[in-house]
Image (tube, rainbow, N blue to C red; front, side, top):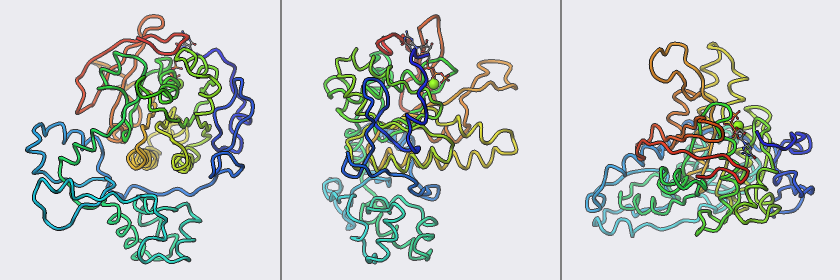
Amino acid sequence: MATAPALDPTISNEEGTFSTSPGGTTPSRRRLSATGGGDRVYKNLPLTHSSQLGLVSSRHRVAFVAEVKIIATIKNIYISGPLLSVSSKKKKPDAEVAQATVEVNPELDVEELEGIGRVTGAKLKEKGYYTVRDVAFASAKELAEIIGNEERAAQIIEAARKMLGLHSFISALEVYERRKKIRRISTGVRALDELLGGGIETRSVTEIAGEFGSGKTQLCHQLAVMVQLPEERGGLEAKAIYIDTENTFRPERIMQIARARGLDPDQSLHNIFYARAYSSDHQMILVEQAKQIIKQHNVALLVVDSVIAHFRSEFPGRENLAERQQKLNKHVADLLRLADAYDVAVVITNQVMAQPDVFFGNPLRPAGGNILAHGATYRIWLRKSKENIRIAKIFDSPYHPEGEVSFRITEEGVVD
Ligand code: GTP
Ligand code: MG
């Protein structure tokens, strides 16, 4: 484990909201504000529901695109998905379809939507729906509770989605073009990057599963530093958000990794917004708050380490399984939606558990069942080898070759 002493949760996470990463030689913890440095603290923002959103999982889009190899074929295929553009509704010759898209600023004020006046606008904003994008990705049920009319809520969401082109079909060529825009963050391990096709992707949820001590948290720390590097060195020159559920975040470790990569350790800590999640509910609220941070700052990575620990401890036993999975489903859908809407790489860690009924093969499997299996776009399995060597494998991927690579956990972070 990391060598640093445990953080005092009352210090590291004032009022259970985000702070820039605590500790190290940076004792002054800045609170977040709408202007990026004042004293307004985002808290208790409402949850939105996503289960009825009908999001097309990126996993399926990836599989779909992977199958379509020839661009000529791509031009003739139209698909629908959560893409922020508006296509011309008139039938166009194939080649023109992709060019006919008009970018609409998804950050338009919610009052720009037809049918929303000042009063409704204020009600929505009070509950955290500030922009057209916020409304487009909301659930009808949640919105109906705010404005008191289910039919109207559905109409407003419809209008927002239309405005952002979320309903219109586009050519698969455009999907292909958009996939080319997906950004990647290097893991810092060349072999693992190669296995991942260049690093972890934005607009996706990448799950890191493995038993205790397999290096999940180490890899998360490393990514929170790697994202800050300039592009030519594998980063995105961006910030990270770190939601820590097990109190295993260590700023000292961030500083070590940053130093090894030639970054200023204090600056690296400043570039990580940190929050400790104290329960599954709190964890979900923090994801909502993270959206506000992403809107104000150049954030390209959101880590949730671990995604499942609170859910497992709060809903023990078979009798609570259905409720747990329902809640976890919403959480993972929220994360997918955030990744897709804000072009952020989401990384979640997951525990593995032994299956008592498996007699042949590997008795271990990631926790979270189908919800995580379908929710995560990419899944990395870590296992321990001798001493500081770890083996990583990508599993369940429609897109990556099955293969294993090894890496080492060292003072400098994870390396080839
Ligand atoms: P759980 O959260 O318990 O499920 O485990 P995890 O998969 O998150 O494991 P974690 O990433 O915490 O990895 C712990 C491993 O990293 C241990 O084997 C530690 O020895 C090793 N480790 C942590 N910090 C350092 C370090 O500074 N130097 C070296 N060489 N190893 C370290
Ligand atoms: Mg861990």
